[in-house]
Length: 254
Image (cartoon, rainbow, N blue to C red):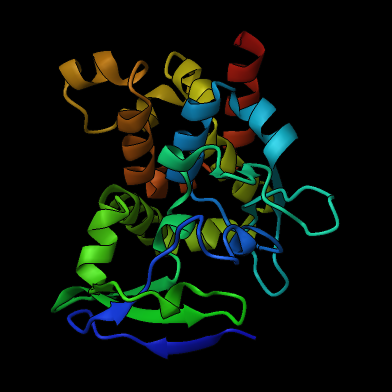
């Protein structure tokens, strides 16, 4: 089991990962790696595939034990080591677009939304027995590590997604409609399909509150589309019983 300890944001720790380490890419195997919507957006852009192809080749949808929400996980390959499908001897083949969890390692991050103080962050260091990176001499602080790994936009998008999913109306929809969880995945992960939905009954809900000029460019901007869909997730939850038929209609048009 990995050793996990709290890490103050301003306190330096020593860590570096590079091909010269004997453990290089060992952390890319035997993982339960959950993928957030922004992770999949970046990976799909790197691979040039649509959501259905990505799901068929690289992901699985499962509901973890004790959870009521289905989640998207990276599908490991059957090579005897349960390796990431994107790892090669020289390292990650999608490195510029790697998921947020891969960027953060060995740092773990949790957030708490306090109504008075706003967003509070908590950090830990994950020390696995195989990892030799902690023996490297380079000191780094949490803020420097996060910035160096390009985690700003990932944390921003993932925080927004988790906050939207925690809203009471969304939680009620997830508890009351097993199909809503799958519809939510389809909406937030299949952005090509979602763009086709803008002309259908889902469109007015998705574009709620947007200025006309923003509506005009939404279909061609996956990032903006994901931001908007996340921001109106509570409104989508109020239509949980109709979402499956709305999504089916948009798929038929596509």
